[in-house]
Picture 1 (cartoon, rainbow, N blue to C red):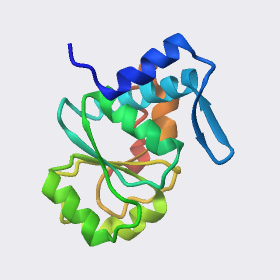
Picture 2 (spheres, rainbow, N blue to C red):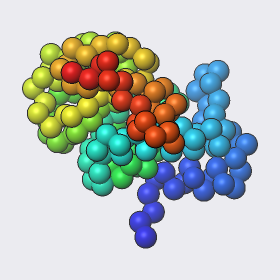
Picture 3 (cartoon, helix red, strand yellow):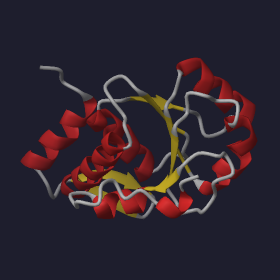
Picture 4 (tube, one colour):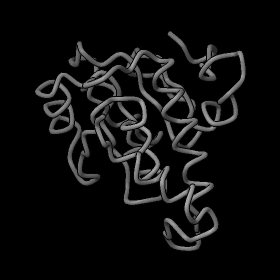
Length: 166
């Protein structure tokens, strides 16, 4: 059996659920909450079609959402591609193209700057926006991480924000 990075989060949640897992500024997550978020995000990515080995980019500032993304992509079977938060749009587009990335996790302000460059990334199938931003300039489905979290375990799927699906 493969041992993937998200297994560490699950095992820690089973052993010490109330222990502090992630601290970023005032935000603190215990292992139980981290695992809940990782599980629902990973399940949402699976519903979006992420399969073993698919590359999903994480273009975020250092944050609890970045940690959730790393473990969540692993949970879905995908391979996370960290993208430094200080890169320019054309540099990010090059990484997406070169890696054959199928999905991107970012925030609304970055997405609005990236949109023109993302049109040149044929492998990119979806974008997950972590801040609830309502931007679909890239011509791709934009989903929101909160809807993926709240729909986890429901029969409605991954919480696709149909109103944002182009």
